[in-house]
Length: 88
View 1 (cartoon, rainbow, N blue to C red):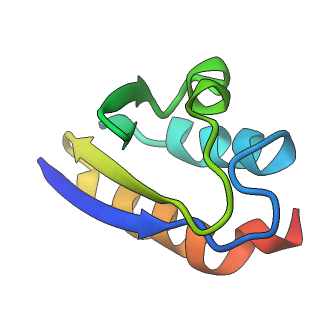
View 2 (tube, rainbow, N blue to C red; view 1 turned 90 degrees about the vertical axis):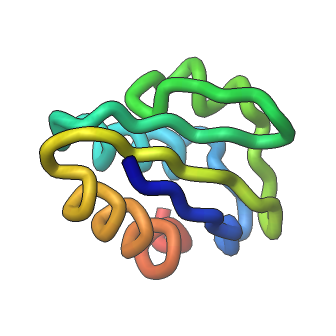
């Protein structure tokens, strides 16, 4: 299991299209992936869970990845957060 703290830097946070892209990215992997914000943990492969967190710009989330492809999954998720979310 690996964890990482990430700051959401795009202009709308994890809402609507960015949330859908986040879930699609996580769903490509076999590992279990969770996101935590302020003590609330949700399945990162659930659009309703991600939307329920209410992640706004400049907020931190904790990403927890556990499974056979955890390193590749975390690398892809971090690339998404750092480089591709703003395009949505």
